[in-house]
Amino acid sequence: MSTQVISVANKLQRIRDSYIKQLPTQLETLRKAYDDLCQGPLESEGLEDLHRRIHTIKGASASFGLSGVSAAAATGEHLAKEAMEAEELPKDWHYRMSECLKAIDAEASKITSSQDVDLNTLELVAATESSKGKETKVVYLCEDDSFQRLTMATQIGCFGFEVVSFADLEQFSQAVQNSPPAAIVMDLVFPDRPVGGAEAIQKLRSGQDFTIPTIFISSHDELPFRLAAARAGSDAYFVKPVNLTILCSTLSVLTSTEQPEPYRVMIVDDDPHLTELYATILTSAGMVTRTLNDPLLAMPLLIEFKPDLILSDMNMPGCNGIELARAIRQIDAYSGIPIVFLSSETDSDLPFHAMRVGGDEFLSKPIKADHLISAVSARAGRMKTIRLSMIQDSMTGLLNHTNFRERLGQAIAETRNSKEKLCFAMIDLDGFKQINDSHGHPTGDRVLIAMARFLQQRCRKTDIIGRYGSNEFGVILPDCDIATARSLLDQLRESFAAIRFPAGGDAFSATFSCGIAELSPQGSAEDLYKSVDDALSEAKNGWPQ
Image (cartoon, rainbow, N blue to C red; front, side):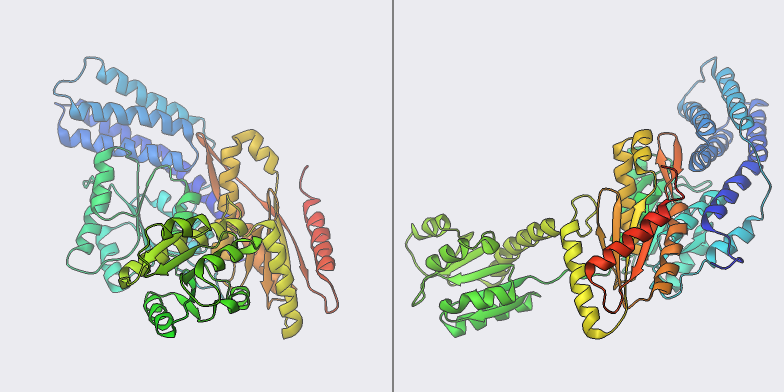
């Protein structure tokens, strides 16, 4: 990485230091707001100003890991809200608020400040972070607090999104109309506008086709605020301090452009007109079909086509539907494939007999097109889910160990044929046992899930990612030489180290080590595994065990 670009981890630390540097000034204005309030009768405008200032300090300090300041400010926020809602203040209210402000000052005095930094310069550096050669999705972030805005923009950027930040709702709205983003992250509360973010989104939605995924963030967890966001069409709602790994995972899902693979349906009927009819109906619904008029030829097509579902007539010469189902069910590889029968028989016992031999549903001819589509979609969808569960890791959704190794073998064979290059990378989360021991296994699981989402978002579309072990991940990089692979993985390593994971009232960072190897002209899969394992062991040597 160029020396002109500040590393993401260092950038985040400097943002935090800058916030700490200006915190005394922020606390002075808070104290002045309270002193002004004490000079005369309590007015709603003054209480609202006090509440807003404490609320801002609570949320921002929590985001920067200043849990003591945040906890003290939370007490003050509660007191301010109590005053706003009360017809008459309790006699000890001023005493409690004064003590709370002292507690905030005391917690702030425990923090070690560091050098000031130009915030505008940092925002410029964050905006120019390189993402060459990757398809980036633009996210608009609207947050009036400059420090929280910059921190969130930097961390969201770690996951491969291009973030454009706004402090002003009007500028944000104009930008959306001029150039719509892939997604929006919107603060709910703005100065003098308790649900200003929701109002801005509602205004954009009114009278136009607004389909931009929108995530709301707020320090308020109460139902009225959640309702305001929901009525504005929110897709997700996060309470500050925001768990940015989960937020970025949500962004990845909401902005995904990958289309699910269509259902594959094998149609067996001795009447060619009916197979053509059913194929036309299902194809119009986006499914892929193959037809067969002789059930005795079912096995070759079954092996070649690998259908998600078989749609079979009941009465066919040479082999009826029940016999075909019984034969297919006796093959382990196809014992779970859904079989839907179609028949014009009126025998009421026939459907039960069909189910006993392995049929999943019995449909009567003639059948309406929408009924056929619904029945096939429901059964094929369940089969697809079962198949995915067999090849995917249940926690991360990545390829599991067995299927990842199979894909690596396929990639090696394809590389041999194409004469292109192939690299293989093995990633190991550093100190993962310490993470589990210090923060608990649920937090460790969240780190693993974040690692998976991070790799899915930042790797190339052609790369194949799998969970190789407990805290190990594998990446297959087709058409990639060793220098390119090293550059890509090193960028990922730096970005991942900058991500902050919340744990109780604090936050921590996680790092990973990586071994990379390139497939040699005559090398085998086992040679590649050994090279990667050796490279990973060398990379781990510097990590304290």
